[in-house]
Image 1 (cartoon, helix red, strand yellow):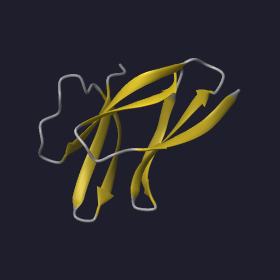
Image 2 (image 1 turned 120 degrees about the vertical axis):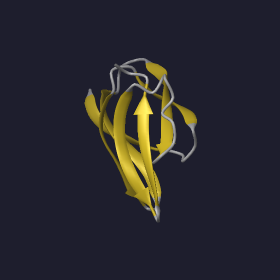
Image 3 (image 1 turned 90 degrees about the vertical axis):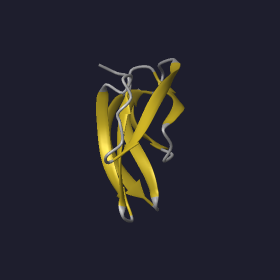
Image 4 (image 1 turned 45 degrees about the vertical axis):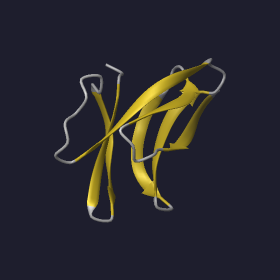
Length: 86
């Protein structure tokens, strides 16, 4: 069944989240002071591990971080999220 899910994201260099294999990112915004990613997926698909990279403005982007997911502002800091997807 095609649905929209969300997951909280940490402000850390790299994290791994577990979500359905066919996920497609929709947006990242701050909800209740927490960076949150919404994505569409088929909830009946197998789950997989997805690496998410968080990079502050002016920081080096890791080589593995090839697909941009979104940007959020947290007070005076700005964070940019990426994943390995091509």
